[in-house]
Image (cartoon, rainbow, N blue to C red; front, side, top):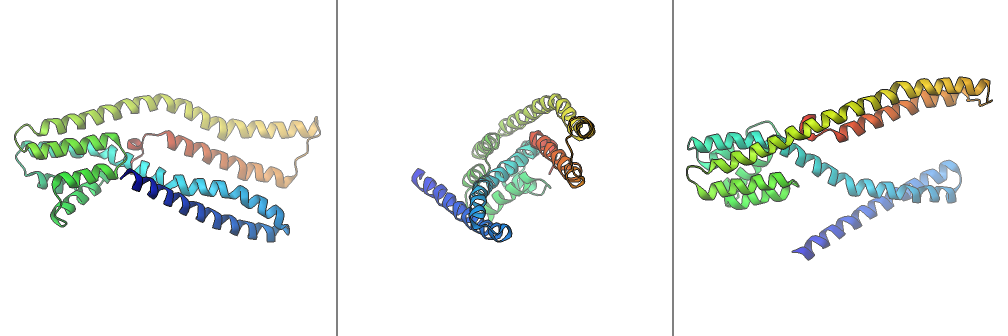
Length: 252
C-alpha cells in the first residue's frame, strides 16, 4: 500500500514536470522571437520552469487544504444536529441524509457518504472511513471515527461523543478567532502603511531626489510605479491577510 502511494506521488510529480517543461518551451519560443535572441530566451525559459513546476505541484495541495478547512469549519454544527437527532431516536442513516441537505461543504461530504451506503451498498463504517480519507484534517478524521463508533453502538448515549467532538472543534475555532483578532491589528497597520504611507514617501523622495540628488524619473517610470507597482503591492498584502485569516472566518 505504501509502495503504491509512493508510486502514485512520483507519477504526479513526473506529470507536473512534463507540463512545466512544455510551458518553459513555449516561453522560450515566445521570448526568443520577441527578444530576437534565442539564447536569452532559453535562459528566461529555464527561470520560468521552477515557478511553473511549483505552481502545478503546490496549487492542488493548497486547494485540498482550503477545502478541508471549509469542511472543518461547518462540521461542528452538522455534528450537533446529528447528535440531537440520534438523541430523539432518528435512524443513523436518516441523520446523515438530513446532514447532506445543508448548504455547506460538510453537507457535500455527508451526501457522498449517504450515496455510498444507499446506492453502492457500502457499509456505514466504510463510507465514513472514505470520508475521513478524503479530507486532510485531523479533527474531521476524529469526527468520522466518532460517528462510526456511534453507529456501531446504536443505543442511547451514543450521541454524547459526537457532541463532545463538535464542542471541541467549536472551542478551537473560538481560540483561533481570538488569536487572529490580535494579529488583525498589526495586519491592518501594515496595509495602511503600504497603501498610503509608502506611496506618499515615494512621491516625496522622487521630488527631493530630482531636486537635490539629481535622481530623475521619467514620466513612464512614475506612471508604472504609481499606477501599477503600488496597486500590485496592495493586492499582495491583501492576499497575505486573506491567507492568514482562518478559513471558518472567510466563509465559502
